[in-house]
Amino acid sequence: MLDLTGKKALIMGIANNRSIAWGIAQQLHAAGAELAITYLPDDRGRHEQKVRQLVEPVNPTLYLPCNVQDEEQTDALFSAIADKWGKLDILVHSLAFAGKDELTGDFSNTSAAGFSRALEISAYSLIKLCAKAKPIFADGGSVITMTYLGGVRVIPNYNVMGIAKAALEMNVRYLAAELGPQNVRVNAISAGPIRTLASSAVGGILDMIHHVEEKAPLRRTVTQAEVGNAAAFLCSNLASGITGEVLYVDAGYSIVGM
Ligand SMILES: NC(=O)c1ccc[n+]([C@@H]2O[C@H](COP(=O)([O-])OP(=O)(O)OC[C@H]3O[C@@H](n4cnc5c(N)ncnc54)[C@H](O)[C@@H]3O)[C@@H](O)[C@H]2O)c1
Image 1 (cartoon, helix red, strand yellow):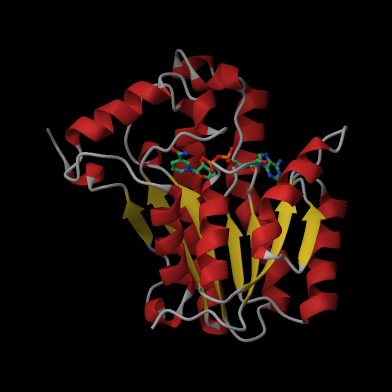
Image 2 (tube, helix red, strand yellow):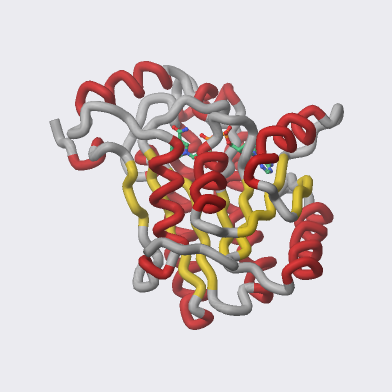
């Protein structure tokens, strides 16, 4: 049975009720995990309040700011987890960013600054977070990150985010190899297109969703809850032999050639 009772899980990437990370948080909570949740701080404190209200039903033990580009915040987050729990079992990395200008038009217009920012936030951050989590994965652990088909195939307008996802998927393999002897598993979920804040920045996202609804074997795209269920499985003992993998949760779209 899928049981995460007693597991301590850090969930990063909830912006609102459409966030994939929110779908994951709800499924991990339902399976019995205890949660630490982060939000991306903004100057006016609006994210803090909005996300705090949203996550109340899953009763997070810790609720902390974390911009992954901010070393102090990231250090403070892992110190707070070490102080509170003394260990971590699950790390959910469900975050990415690229400037809107980089997510439409010609890929060759990608700026050096836009490239670095997208790669730092969307791919490098997983390496940094795993390095900080490594000492507190005391009883083994499971890391989940979110990727997309645009990291292995060309998808219109996905542009620099495709490069970031390709790097992220390779990060998963290198991290799985490094952390495996410590019984920490590292996997990615490649989700079908879902309407969220992040995906709305990608030019033509609604057309992408309609295309998937027409062509995917299941004739639809997926929900946050379906991705959450797959994440709960990957974090559980039912997936104890799986690491370094990219699990497609995309209504089968990625298998279709024509
Ligand atoms: N929505 C889709 O169609 C889809 C499909 C496949 C993969 N994904 C991936 O799923 C993940 C979650 O995206 P989502 O679609 O739920 O959108 P979302 O906008 O709800 O989530 C993105 C999150 O990234 C966070 N973030 C951005 N910059 C950050 C930073 N510097 N530090 C910390 N957090 C930061 C945002 O605050 C937000 O919570 C992303 O990696 C995305 O690429 C999304």
